[in-house]
Length: 173
Image 1: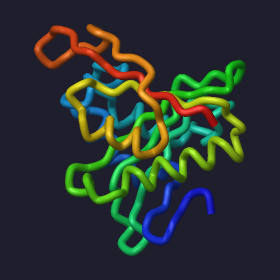
Image 2: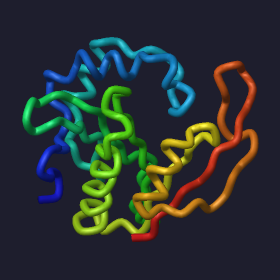
Image 3: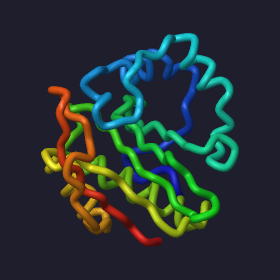
C-alpha cells in the first residue's frame, strides 16, 4: 500500500489535527526552515483543513500526517510544496517530533512519499533544501536516495538574523 507499512500510516489532515497543526505552524523555532514567519490563527488553520481538497493539482501542495498504526499517535508529517505541474517536480519537507527521531520513521515516511509521487503523481523530480548544520536531515535524504547537488552560501536566514548555507538534495524519479 502506498500510504502505510507495518507500523506507520500517512494520511490526509483531519479536523482532529487542528491542535497539533496549530502548535507546529506557530513554533517559531521551525520558521527558519519554512517560508512563513507569521503566526497562524486557529480559524485560518481550521479553514485550511476544511477547504483542502488533498489534491496536489488543486491545492498546489500536499501535507500527509504520519501516525503510528498501533496507537494513532502523530509522529510528524511530510509535505510536497512548490509543485510544478509543468516541470513535474515538487519540494519535499519533513517534520518529526523529537521523540520519534533517529528511529527510522523519517526514512519510512520518505520511502512511501517517493513511491506515491513516482507511481501516482508521475513526478520527474523531488528536491529538498537542508540547512548545513542539520546533519541528521542530510543523512536522511541521502539514505533515501537523494543526491546533494549544491551547497549555497547565505541561502537560509538563521536564528540570529544572519544567513547560513543550505544543501540542495534532488531525486530523479
